[in-house]
Image (cartoon, rainbow, N blue to C red; front, side, top):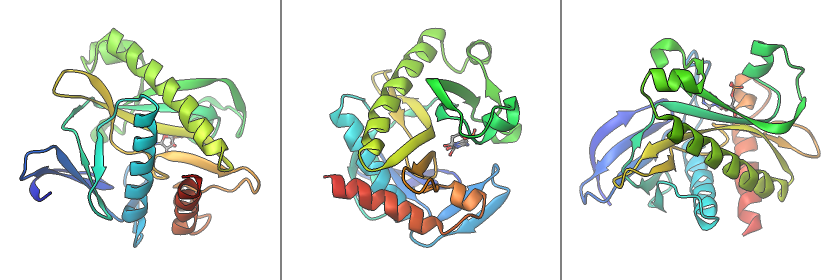
Length: 237
Ligand code: C5P
């Protein structure tokens, strides 16, 4: 597949048309950002690792019946995906309290939720991706109530599948972010990426982070954590 016109460049990925008109090409960059782009670094090799982890997880979810945009991995840094129109929502699922929910609501760090929590954020850099509720989603005409319900159900299914996947390799899935898109048949499907940039993953034994918190908090080598996640996933095959 050959890169066509650049459609969009985000903080961690670039989306291109393909000359074959066979879907979009996703290019994973080495750029790492935190705090809505305030903290920024280039981590050589991060893009390749995230492409591999994301590819693995999308294929795993596909095998388990979760429709998503992933078609195939075409190079170390590139994957081919279905063309979708991204719904401007960041869907966060939380199993354990940490990060913004602790700051916002005063919840104690590491509190384990008896039921996973699903939150919606409005994907809008200028507004700083604010937390919104389904009423706001309807008001802003981002998605209908039934689509919001569908997304919530799918997000919880994905949470069950990924919690099990990571448990099997000694990792706690603390929380993660999903994005959904509308495909050519008007179906709502999982899109974007699922990687240590978008998940919090804690080693069960050592309790240490294997995800972007290593960068956010300056706690250690990002590549070491991400590589550990990839190797454990691969070892599972
Ligand atoms: O910062 P916060 O605690 O709300 O993050 C919750 C989860 O969503 C984390 O796993 C984080 O990596 C992910 N997230 C993301 N992109 C954002 C915001 C959060 O991937 N813009």
